[in-house]
Length: 160
Image 1: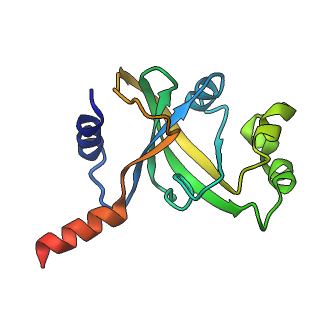
Image 2 (image 1 turned 180 degrees about the vertical axis):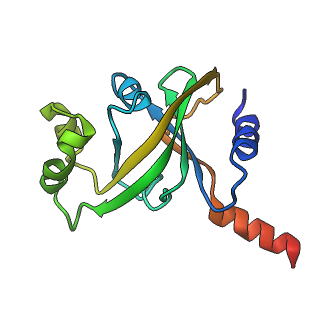
């Protein structure tokens, strides 16, 4: 399935215009831990303000895709926290979330030392779904498939 077709599928599956719909790419063992509700917090770090920073909200839906593989699950966002790492230290983030993120190795945190922004997402209702093969060729680890703010703008333009 190509990305446009998957976006249409996602809109039909979750027609609520008051939520965003996301696609998040996971590596193992984190995908497995998330799918089975063992890992209930997800983190994304970046040098720039890119998704999911400022783009994900409580009640949003996230489709879970295995890196190099299929979409195999979905979940709901329960809560979200955004951090500007110019104002909050990575050490503080690590102290607050390391156990919840199920990250115990120092290498992960060393890789993130140049990051400027962090997004922490508490997820709920993780569910396995029938695998969907998605043709995704870019390297983005997080994609906003449906942005409620864009949908409202388009809707407003067509109803005035």
